[in-house]
Picture (tube, rainbow, N blue to C red):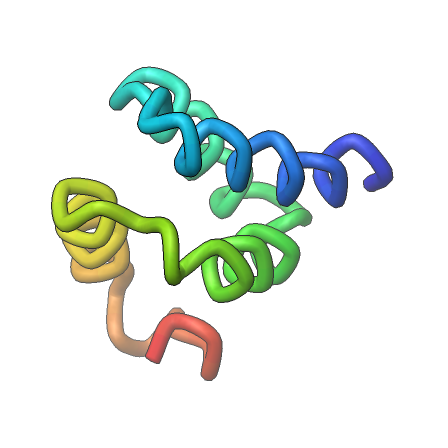
Length: 76
């Protein structure tokens, strides 16, 4: 759990340095399919000001793949 929470600082730094690669972004997003789902959404919310359009598009594309009946409030 602490490692996931530290992702906030890592993702923020990568975004600020324009170094968040698609592969790292995919690895980060894979945490959303685990017990750390809500932490991932919290981190995305906290780093939102640094997201580039391609990151936003990726997250929206991934969220659209979630069945509506399985969506939580955070996905909206």
